Amino acid sequence: MMLRNRGGSTGLPTSGYGGDAYGSSGGTSSAGGYQQSYGGYSGNNGYGGYSNGTGGGGGYAAAGMAAAAAPMSGYSGDNDKIKRRSSRAGGGMGIGGANSSLVMGGMIVAGVFFFLTTLYYRSVANGVLSSLDVRSKADAMDLVDTLKRDVDKYRNQSKDQKRAAHDRYSNQITNLQEEKRRLQKERDEFKAKHADGHGERSELEEEVERLQHREDAFLEQLLRLQTATRRESKRSVLERFGPAPHKVEVKFVLPKDESQHEYNFIIEMAPLDLVPHAVHVFMEQVAHGLWDHTYMYLNGPHILQIGPQNMELYHYEPTTDDDGRGPQLHAFTEKGLKELSFPDYHPDFPHKPWTIGFTGRPGGPDIYINKLDNTEDHGPGGQYQHAIDEQGDPCFAKIVSGQENLATAYQQKTYADSSAWHYFLKDPIEIVQARVLNSVQPIPESMLTDQKPHNIDHKQHNGEEIKPQLPKGDHMTAQA
Image (cartoon, rainbow, N blue to C red; front, side, top):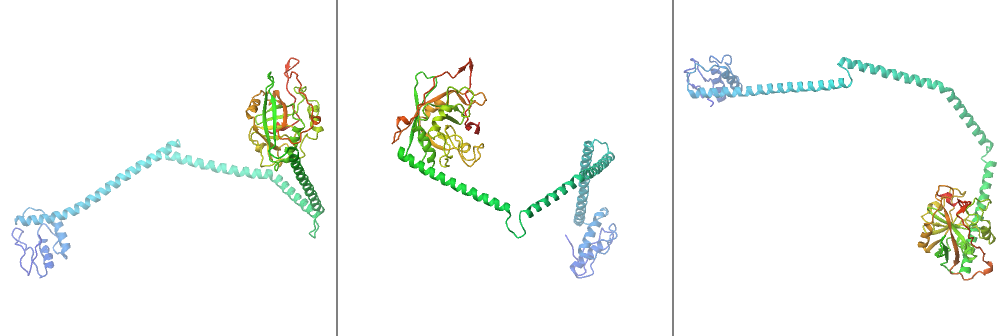
C-alpha cells in the first residue's frame, strides 16, 4: 500500500525508526510527495546513500533494493508497516534474482555445448588419424605434405612424357601435314585438268551423263518388255485355262509305302493382275506334265523344296554342270519352261506360310512351299547372294487344301548331319501327278512328257549309307 503526503502533513509516525521523520513532504503534488516520502525514508540508518530520489520510479526501485539490504532488527513500528516494507523489499529481490538465474543457466548451457562440440570434433579427428594410419596431427600433416610432393612429382612426370611424345612424333606429324598438302595440291590439279576456267563441263562429266542416259534407256526398254510379258501372260492364261480362280491338284506318295496310298493338295494361283508371268509359266509346266515324277527332296526348317531329280544319281556327287539332272531338266528346257524371263514378284502377294515360290533368279524350275513367314528373307533385299537385291523370289500361288497331308511330308527324315546335305530327305517324296483343274484347252497326249519313276535302292551303295547330290540351286544358302 502506497502512502501519499497531502498538504505538508506528516504521513506516518516516526516512533521506532530512530527519530527520523518519514514521509515529510514539502510540496502539494501527490507524485512529489511520494518521492519525498521515500527520500526521507532512505535517510534512515541501514539504508545509507539513497537520501534523494529524483523520480517516482527511480526512488521506488532504490528503496526496494535498500530495504532488501537493510537489517530488519531494531524496528519497533506496527507489524502492518513492517509487512508492507518487507513485501516491497521482496518484490525487488525477486526481479534481480530471476535475471541472475537466467544468466547463470545460459552460461551453463553454453559450457556444455562447447564441451560436447569439442568431444565431437576430437572424435572426428581421431577417426581421420586412424583412417590415415597415423598417430598424431603432426604425422597427418607430414602425410599430407608427402602426398602433395607425390602429386607434384607425377604432374611433372606427365608433362615430361607429353613433351617427349611430342618430340618423338613431331617428325611424323610434319610428314603427314606435308602429305596432306600434297594431296590437296593433286586434287586441285585434277579439278583444273577436268574443267576449264569458263565454267564448261569437262569430258569426264559429259561421259558420265552419256552413260547415265544409256542406262535410263535400257531400263525403260526393260520395263516395257516386262509390261508386255505380263500382259501377254495374262491373256494366255485366260484364253488357255479360262477365268480365275485357277487351281492345280498335286498327288504324291510317301516312300516305302507298300500300299502306294496317294496324298494330294490343291494349289490356287495368285491374282493375274499381280504376277501373271509367274502364274503362266507354272501352269504351262503343269499342263505339259513336267511336274509328274518330280520329287520333294529338301525339307528345311522354313521351306519344302520340289524339283526334278535324277534318282539314279541322287545319292552321288554330281559330275556335270546340270547337277546330274540332265534328262529331267531337258524336258523343261525343250518346252522353253525351265525358268522365268524375270523375277515376277509383287509385294501384295508375299511369302506367307503355305504360299509357293520359284527358287533362284530369275526363278525356276524348282519351287518351294513356305513353311513360315518368309516375307523378309525371300522378298526384296532378302537374298544377299543376288546382284539386284531390289528383286524378290516370285511368289505365285497358295495351298488351299491338303495341308494335313503336307504336314505328313514335313515329318520325313533328313540327313541332319550339319553337312551340305543337312536338310535333304533321306528318301525323297515322289510327285505322282500334277494337273490343272480348270483347263479349257486340254493339251494333246503327244505334247506331254513321258517321265517314268526309277525303282532303285537309294539307301545303300557298296554296303555304306550314301548321301544325295547337292543341287545347283542356291535356295537353301539364303537361310540356314
